Length: 166
Length: 161
Image (cartoon, rainbow over all chains, first blue to last red):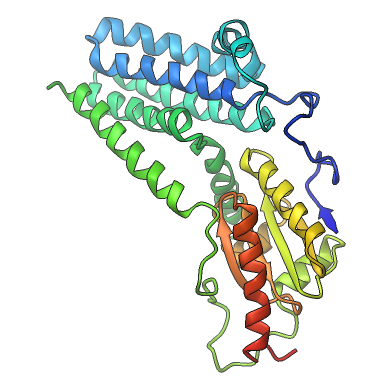
């Protein structure tokens, strides 16, 4: 017997490997590819001289923001996956909900904005550390399929719930 | 090497360390029962274990053999795979039920159980007391082994029910 108390999920609808994409679900390899491209961009931000680094980081911040506001399927990286990568791959074994990576894009956006603000204010190292943190999250997603931003969500909620309770 | 290059190198090192640590520990059920901050060992157990209370509050039923209590959240990709695996085990093994709760909707239980990540799977014995738990998506074999452990726990006589 399975009892599900999570809103928005229906007990009994278990996706099997051969199943077509459930409505709204995404191929988990799409955010992974996006994370790989993001990693390259963030490494470039760390290696390039200030003007180019700032411009790149600003561009990446816009992409993070786009992913967070319009959803992960609305970013150019998702388009890249759909048109160039997806046709060459077998269907995924598992589909994924779009909300977790979308939330993580928001976390990435926050780090990119902190990095930008610090760099603009002249605190280059502080900005680079923020970019480095975003880079760890992106690399973990690309290489290991782990979504740190998603895990942060529960910790944030726990922390805020405690603050309200006390 | 520039500061940026050092930070990039450090990020790679941290990533590999965290990634390997997660690969090694994800879905692994702990041998020792979870942190039990509630009471000293010799004190009387609470009338209703928190697990039993939580399962009842979401309208679920404790399994006669074991209950797989899954903490999930909306922003959690591996929760899906975990739901499927635990559902399979519940279908496969007699007396095992799968109960999924949204960690956000049950903040008190989330704190009582000390849930830091989703998915976390807590294995409850027939009385609703925690036997073991795993953070991260477990494999079917890992869940089956954990369920088997509930049986041995029972045979040990450590369970007074």
